[in-house]
Structures are given as structure tokens and as C-alpha cells.
Image (cartoon, rainbow, N blue to C red):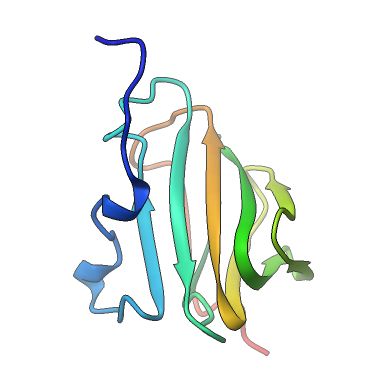
Length: 131
């Protein structure tokens, strides 16, 4: 294996497309496998203007850090709202229930998780963030 791998995250398969969600509303592009990452994971998350993720999640082992790189977003972590603007980073421990929504112009987030747990570490809860 080479000492590096190059992938454009915007070209990785959108994982939510198979669930019938409009890609203008939500994109989730997981780079762990294409990048051949051994110890962590990284994903590109794009949220449309005002779009709230319909599901929240926790993990069994993995902690994640979300970094807003464009636009703005709100993140709900265990019932507390965190406002995100470019370069805001939010670390969430495995047990933290998390969901996010795009601001008025939408948002682009990078999510980094470790350790690399592979499939099955996430626990999804539909409809958790209701106001």
C-alpha cells in the first residue's frame, strides 16, 4: 500500500441518495474506505438551506469532530444547540446524541471520527430533534 491516498470527497458516493433524500437537502459522502483509512474516518456533509437532518445518532465507540467549512449550521448535541460558522469545530463523544441543520445559506461540514470502528458502530434515532 502507498503511503498516501488522494480522493476528492465531493466525488465519493452520496450515502443518502439511496434513501430518496434530495441531494440539494443533504449529502453524506464517507471517505474512510476510498481513502483506505486504518484508524479514523472522514466524511463530507452538505446541508441545504434550513434543512434539518431527519435522524440523530450516537456511536458505541467512535467520537466525532464536526468542522463547518462553509455557510452556517446549528447542531443539536444532547438537547443543547450549538451555532456553527466557518471553522467552528464541535467534538462529540460516542454517547452524545447529535443532529444538525443548515443555516439560511446551507452548510458544508467535515466530520472526522476515531477510532475506525467500521460499519455497525452508529445508532440512529429518527425524529429525535423536534421543536
